[in-house]
Image 1 (cartoon, protein in one colour):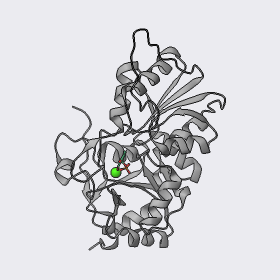
Image 2 (tube, protein in one colour; image 1 turned 90 degrees about the horizontal axis):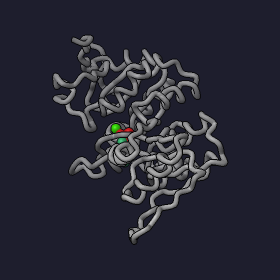
Image 3 (tube, rainbow, N blue to C red; image 1 turned 180 degrees about the vertical axis):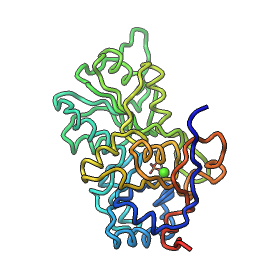
Length: 302
Ligand code: PLP
Ligand code: CA
């Protein structure tokens, strides 16, 4: 038998939790918004935390937008959040490459959408690929040979609604023909909620295709990997035990917080239901759970 997993506690005293940390890291989809709709009570909750002097940081695995584009999204939803407080997995890919001094004279092949391209460009990297790449079907005449740029030193894979077979082949050539080529994944989420009517295949599906063809495992820069947590702790000078990670997913958000040694709070306003949390097969238990973050406004010790 493995070590006992302590079941999550229902949050009863929000003030005690708030007082016990200096920083809150919020996941976005399922916590702050659902798709394009703001979750109720969020503006007042963020205001309360700011008035108590808490540092607020927002982390999303959705790589389709840049941090600047997320800044606009927060603004559109009526939330005053600074770009510098937002960490999307698109930004994480660029920050990771910077952190390892990835040579500026090498190129990066991107399977993914605009967010990744914008962040790579802002960081001064040159890339090829992106949503438009390989969109046209290639006619496979006898003898057709796909050339690839041998100066590609990294392949970055994120969520890509323009994904196709020729992108897989190109990325595979870059990785297979150059053993030193890096293979990065922005995130490996199995599902996303493009619409609220059903679950859609997530960024993990695109990454999985390249894992299948290259037989290599990527370095993930988004949640639950420790890269972003280390980056944030370093950037803001935060002690990880002084952080509470708030999210709606067990295998990305809560694991991200636990991998970082943070306190963790699961909200039931997103993809995880109480029965999923309490399922005996689930071994990921946050410290606390509550319905939504606006419970911070009402939950007081008896
Ligand atoms: N990736 C994509 C493409 C998404 O659409 C979403 C959510 O909408 C996510 C990832 C997960 O985002 P978050 O980490 O903010 O929950
Ligand atoms: Ca989420």
